[in-house]
Image (cartoon, rainbow, N blue to C red; front, side):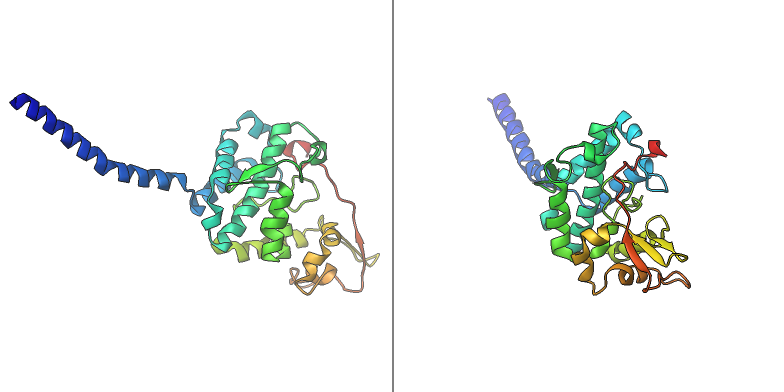
Length: 260
């Protein structure tokens, strides 16, 4: 009889212990399932530092050879709780997600010469992003352009081409985003390969994004050369506003380290 009572007592002790542990485990699981912006930022920066050089070119072959870091990052992007993030963190998240998803799609189809070799790359292929299924176009338009009304994002989004601005090797961060976007715009618009100024011909050649997204730039009150000059403040760097303006053809070639 005493042995039975001791056995029953041990059973209740274990049961009560399990009941007390379950809420803690559930809470830990909930915390683990959530992906804080800081974790995603660190993960993205580590990936970019590993596979993107100072010229913004990507080592697609190396990523394809060892895709573990990319796969982990894509999982984090898919699982990120964007709905409950701050507006600034959402902005940074979708910028980072776009750039990483571009790399992921290229790696899956590598080797190739251009993103145009992948039908539906921008508007058909859907990705798991923050709990939603989105195309690259939907990220750019619905999650960024329509919400933030900020033309600087066009210098932060990199769609894997030679004519895109240099890919930043550091993840965008909500609390630092204003400065980061300003710096990215300054770097792109001061690059003589991106804004081509010919003083002898009194001509400036701009990337076609200034034509394609003129409505976006006009929301800032300035377009074309006037917009460019906002970010070329150094002495002698401003483009004369009386110069003729042309748009040079977009180079859809891949921003691949192997092509250099």
